[in-house]
Amino acid sequence: MENLLPSTTTDFRLTTATPADAAHLTLFVNRAYRGETARQGWTSEADLLDGIRIDEAGLREMLALPKAAMLLCLSDENELLGCFHVQANGALLYLSMLAVAPTQQGQGVGKFLLRSAEDYGRQHGCAVSRMTVISVRSELIAYYGRQGYHPTGATEPFPADPRYSIPRQPLHLLVLEKPLT
Image 1 (spheres, rainbow, N blue to C red):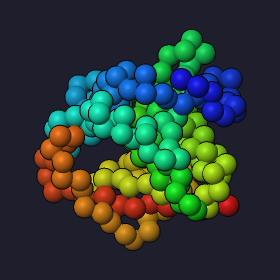
Image 2 (image 1 turned 30 degrees about the vertical axis):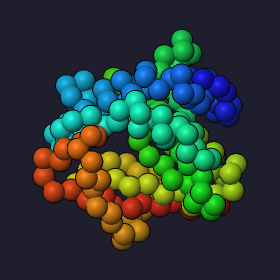
Image 3 (image 1 turned 90 degrees about the horizontal axis):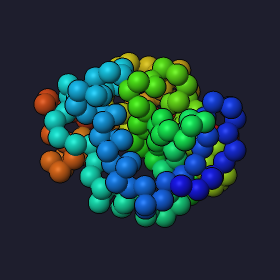
Image 4 (image 1 turned 120 degrees about the vertical axis):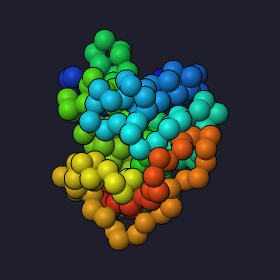
């Protein structure tokens, strides 16, 4: 892990992941998104999807993307509290896979990572931040709305890769955006 940006709070520290972190991050993300552990938080996908969220090879691929980083939120005791994948592509910042430890949800970790991601985008010349959210996740869409992200009206099909997830019902993704300028 290497330092990326200074923290704006004394409670959290921001770093970026390296390939050496891939195995640990894979376990962390899967626990945050799926299974019984994920049900401890309010952002679980455990009732919508079976399978895993990501495997180690997929996470390594994300880390290797150009102008991309996996932002890590650590406690003062160096405990991983959350992570967020960011990728700058010209004027567009694409955000994906925000994962917060279920027991830490509601403590400001997600907001810290979201603001840090937006700062990353501004540092890379991005004017717009974009993400996709499963359309039936109304509480998550409302959360992002309170952070300034709004539906664009565009949708995307839910990824059909059984290696990562098996939907229990038909799903699609809403595209949300926020200006960074």
